[in-house]
Image (cartoon, rainbow, N blue to C red; front, side):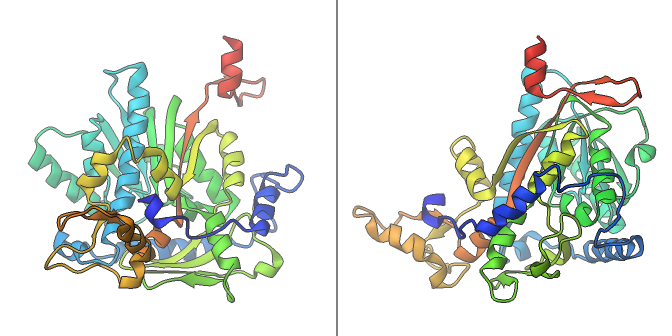
Length: 400
C-alpha cells in the first residue's frame, strides 16, 4: 500500500531548526514552572473544559454509519496501528515471563475503543482514565457489554480525571498498583499546553510503571504538521475530511509548549490541540525514566509492520478495493486514486476478479499526520537526596 500511496509531504529545513532548538540544553528550560509560557491556569482550565465537552458530546455511532463514513478506512488503519502496538509490547513483556498476569493503564481512554484489543491481548487488569466523564461512563458500559458477551474478561476500573492536572495514583483503588504497560492513544498532545501539564502527565504515566515495562502510544506528528503548514499561504491546510490551522504567529517561532492549532477530522475531532515537539518529549520523558525505543510516522510504521501483521490488515479492512467491485462505489473521488490507477494500468495479466488494496489519497494524507512511539521504563537507584537515578539500557548492559 505504501508503494501505491507514497509520502505526501517533504521535510522542511526550518522544521529541522525547531527540532534542533528542542535538543539544545542551552535553549530549553525544563524547571517545573510556567514562566514565559504562552498559557495561564485560567486559560488551561478553559481549554480542558472545551476538550472534555467535545468528547462528552461526541455521538456513539453504529457500525452501519461508520461503514458509510468518508474516513472508514482511515479509522480502521488507526485501529490496526493501535492493535500492532498492543500486540508488540505485550509480547515483549511475555518474552521474559510468559505466564505473568499483565496490568495496564489506558490513559486518555476515550469511550474504550481498545477494550477488545486488551481482551485479545489476554491482560489481567486495565485501569481506564480520561478527562471526559461521559466518555468514561460509555467506556464502562461497553466493558460490561463485552463481559456479558465473553464471560471471562479482565478486571477493570474507570476514572474520570484530567490526566494533565490530577494525580491518578490518588484515585486508584489500590495506590500500590504497578503496571506492565501504559497506553496513550491520540491523547498525549493535550498535555503540551504547558510544561506543568506535560510533567503531570508523564508522572501519571511513569510513577506506577514497572522497570522494563513499556509506555506506547500515538500522537499527531508535529514536524509533519509544521512542514505542511509552512507550504500553505496562511498556516492552514487539509482536504475535505480534515483541516488544521495554526493558532499562533509562526513569525515569532514555534513555542515548545502551548503551540495551539485547530484540528477538524470528519466526525471524530473538532477542537484545539497542541503540537508536541518530539525531541523535547523524548528529553522530558527521560527525566521520568522513560527511554525511547521506537518512533515512526504512520507511513513508516506501516512499512515496519505490514508484513508481520498482513492478516490483521485484511481482517480489520484497512484498505479499499480498487477498482470498485461490481455494484459498489469508491469512497472518494476518482482523482483520489491516481496512484492506484497508475499501478493498475501497469499490470499486464489480470482478470475481472483482481483488485488492488489501497486508500484514498485524502484519507492517507490524514493518516500520515500521525506517528507512533514506544518508551521503556529504566531501572533506577536512589541518590543521597532520595531522588531516582535512572540507568539507560546501554548503561545497564555495561554494568552486567
